[in-house]
Image (cartoon, rainbow, N blue to C red; front, top):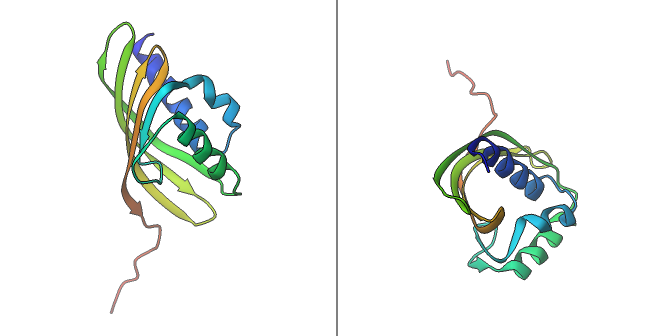
Length: 131
């Protein structure tokens, strides 16, 4: 797979995870050996854990969208690609905007490892001047 396609591929996967899309669309991207860390849980999630977590997560009415997505390919060969980057996650119901950092290991075009961590919450409040 060409390098520029991995960037689009990665963004599509992350948008599927966070944009409340049908889980069935996401399944082909997940390796049965997948491990995930940092998806609003503690510890390491396996394939079944991830599916159950996403089903629970999708059952709410929250709306999310990703902005300012960037990615860096750390390593790539014919079957493995290691990607790191960040994105801004907007949670409309909470009027919250949070920066996330992520690492993804893709093997044969499926996610083997996904790690996300929260960078910071971004405030949209206007500062008032003091006199």
